[in-house]
Image (cartoon, rainbow, N blue to C red; front, side):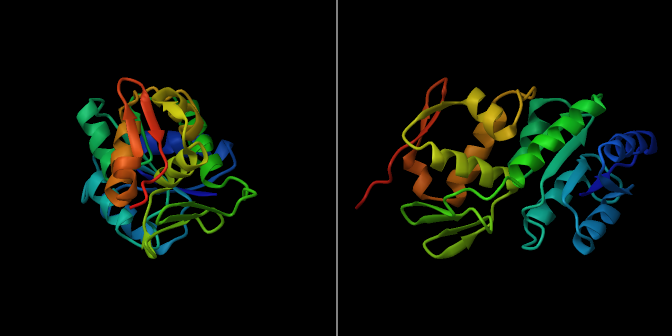
Length: 228
């Protein structure tokens, strides 16, 4: 697995690369935003660790550009930044980041989050190859989604959350359960990340606007789509 580290602080970049190499992964360090975007577009990359504050082009713009690129839209992205307030976390998640780690951070925790994210992105092919929900069709083999016959671009985490909701429709799912089962660990950044991803799914897939019901102060429930 090849991981792109977009980080302008050489000490942090080298530290992250050291721990990733110990885990058996290849890395490439890009010290600026424009170099990171250029590398991601021209080389095979399985995951990107993206600092929010980069010279040349900031992490939010890079994330936005990659999510708009058909060939790279599904590459998992973990935001890495010194900013720790909720507004910055939500901004990154809102434009398509899959996870968020604030500095200072534990390299071992970062490795654990990468493993959890990749484990769910590259899970074994399930017995059922497609899931259908009204006009929505999810292909679990090719990791593609179509709505009324039109292809819909989802990030890796959006796809996994949608799959989990479809596989558990009719059940009330707490935010904590969603974090643990979809994100793969007890997420320390709070449950707001679930709400952001749910909102993005509703925006991209109109059938979920009414079918994916918010259970106040608890979580969500996917109900059967209403037939006109």
